Every structure is written in C-alpha cells, then in structure tokens.
Image (cartoon, rainbow, N blue to C red; front, top):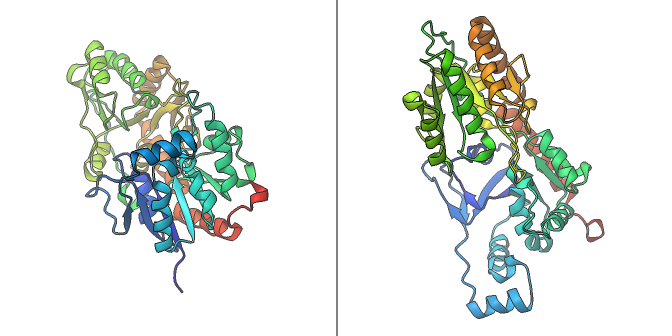
Amino acid sequence: MEKPVVASYCTTFLKPEMLHIYRQVSALQRYKTFIVTKERQCAERYPFDDIECLPPPSQPLLRRFYLKFIKRVAPLYYRGEMEQLVELFGRRRADLLHVYFGHTGVHLRAFLEWWDRPALVSFHGADVMPRAHQPQYAGHMRHLFSLVPLVLARSQSLAERLKAAGCPEEKIRLNRTGIPLGEFPLIARETPSDGAWHFVQSCRLIAKKGLATALTAFAEFRLAYPKATFTIAGDGPMRRELGELVANLGLGDAVSFPGFLNQADLNALYARSHVFLHPSELTAQQDQEGIPNSMLEAMATGLPVAATFHGGIPEAVQDGATGFLVPERDAAALAAALKRFVESPEMLRQMGCQAAESVRAEFDQKSAIAKLEACYDEAVALGKPAPGKR
C-alpha cells in the first residue's frame, strides 16, 4: 500500500539551529514527505533528496503595485507566490500540508483557504509572540486557526499561549520533538579534584537564552573556583555583545565560543562537561522558549541542568531531581545552584543519571515521530474545516 504524503513547508530549509525540524522530516515512518522551501541552507549539514525550492517571484513591478495598493490583496498574491504554490501542488500529490512556524502559516492563509486538502501548523516558541507593530496580526492568527483542523505545540506552555491567542483548545496537540537517543549515550564523568569544573551551554546567541545571566552567574561561581571554565556553543546576533560582557566580567580565557558544532564535536563537549546551563527568559517582545533540544541532548548524556522556571523547561527538568531551576534573570540564584552541584559530587552524579533516564522515558524520537504521524492521521481524517466552521 502506498504511503500517504505530507508536504513539509519551511521557509528556510534549514538554518543551523533547526536540527529539530530535520529530525522530524527525515525520520517519518508511515508517511512520505517532500520539502517546500524558499531558500536552501546548510545542505551538507541537513541532506535531503526531495526538495521543491520555490524561485523568487517575478511579479512585474506595475502589477505588484496594482495588486498591493489598489486591489489590496494578500502578500501571497501580489508577490506572485500564490501562482507558484498552485502550480506546485497541482503537479505534486500531497494528502496533507505541515507548515512549520506559526508566522509562516499566517503568511500562507490565502493558499490554505484555496487548497482543497487539510493542513496543520506547528508552533515552536518565537512564533507565538504578539506583534504590536502589526495591529491586524492577532486577527490573522485567529483566521489561521480557523483554516486548519489541528495546531501543534512543542510544549504545554506554548499550548497555553496558543489558547490565549484564540486557538480552540480542541484543536491543539502536543508535538514534542524527540531525541535520537542512540546518538547520546550515557557518559560516566569524573568530578575534578582541583576545582576545574566545566559548564556548557549550547544554543543560538539570542536574548531569550539568558546568556548574560549565565555569564554573570559563572563569574560569581569562579570567585570560589578560579579554575572553572564555561563553553557557549552556538552563534547569533549577540556574539559581540557577549564577548564584551566576558571582558567586563574579567573572565578572560575562562569562557570560549566555538560557534555551532557538528554532532560529534558537541558530544565531545558534553563528555568533558559537568553541568548544562540554560537560564532562558521571556524577552520584552514576549519571545518564549519551547523545550530546548540541546538541553535534552545534554541530559541524555547524563548532564544535570541549571536552568529557569521558563516556558517548557519545567516540563523536562524536575527541580531538585534532574537539575535546579531558578527564577528568570536571577544570576545570584543561578550561581548558588551551581555551587550546590559541585559541593555534592554524589548528588551531581545521581541527578545526571536521573536526567538521562527522564529523557529516555519522555523524549525518545521514535515515540515522538509515532505521535506526530498520529496527528497527521487525525488531520487527514478530519479534513479541511468547512467554511461554516471558520
């Protein structure tokens, strides 16, 4: 029997920090998928054979002006993207469309209204932010919710944000992104006898990751343990700012920024570390974390976590059992948590083992893919909402 087909739409396939999406689309079992994207990135890092890369629309300038300012049609029309999608989906069979990221779903509303098949959209964190500079955006989001049978959320905290944004609760399904546990074996670590503790954080260098709080807490910790080091793996717009903060805190060579690492190098980094930091925080723009995948990977190797009561983190880290959680932006509390870890090597070891066990029980990739495909089954069975239901 031929497998059903889901078209996976992701505007950029894929940015370095989008490993979780690659894991989903490349691990499907009962469904076939092809990718629809506007831009191909990191092809060596994320190989995929069946990709439909939409060319830049070539709408004549005068027609674009007419459609945008006279007819006032949606961007999908005046940019010429609608014609591309109609041609593509007339040529390619798809039983279902999975749109990655809520703001992309908002952009695609005109197509979702036109297409005669069901679609679902998954939310991952930043895409639940309100947009004060776009007063009509909240209404567009509610319109999107009316066009799809199901909406996926990476964490329960994101599901609550979606409900507050107007998504009917009965449409929301939890869509945790799983970890391929075979790639992250449990590692037996030795505690340093000379105080050379090593901390690690792996993430994109952006505000919601709480990196300034992590560095400030590490500086306080290092007053008691001057041989301690901290590696921040990743890249992003805050790189220069964080380098300046390292200098201002007098941390010198104690902090390193190796950039985005491949899986082997990241695993090696985890293996020589003792605690994983991820003190995420809600930004002024209401940008919220789902459940950080790098945190789950680190936990799978036996690293306990020092993080915050933020977003989906408490859904993965049990305070006092698999790590310590502190309030957002509280560097003093985070430093105190780090000291609690290192003052009891047995507790550190026990928490690491419990962290690995919890990830294996709750975030296995095979189980996550099975649940995702069950959502696909449900969306296909429900079909596209009738006009009267929108």
